[in-house]
Length: 194
Image 1 (cartoon, one colour):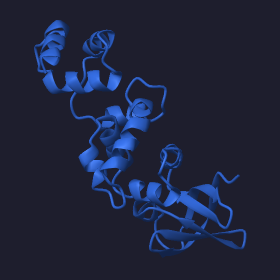
Image 2 (cartoon, rainbow, N blue to C red):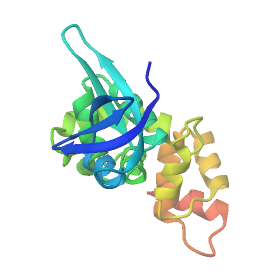
Image 3 (tube, one colour):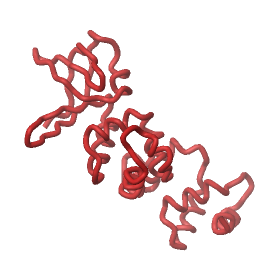
Image 4 (cartoon, rainbow, N blue to C red):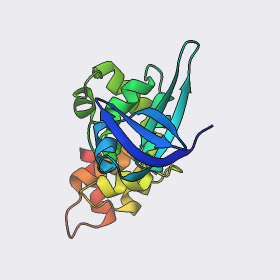
């Protein structure tokens, strides 16, 4: 229903902001990161929004970028993740770090986010990893590649996938063993040895 609100940034509270547009003050739940990106009180800003409708409540959630909003929607489609928990996840770090934690199955890092336990972190990884991994159709696949610090040999990844690895498993295995001077065959053999 709402894509974004453009107006004056008039107030920031704990986990929410108020944006005045057309004489109406819109209260939007937002992560600390989004609140910081909006600028200073009195500045003009543009906030992407998501309207959550329940039987007894309607809430607006705000995001500094369209990418954050799109990722939020992916998160709330994971069973057991509500809008407030998704905002908490977004507020735990920058978007590419969160995506990298999911695509590399870093359950430990995800489990440290307030309100997320080990089981919830595992569920997030299981439900989103392949949707966000490099090579997937997702708009976030490039974020995961940017967040990765080790270059990945695509031929070695493809070879491992032909042997039954998922793209994510193959990417992680190649990243672990790749060294300068190794050819594709040597990388694949090293990855298979573990």
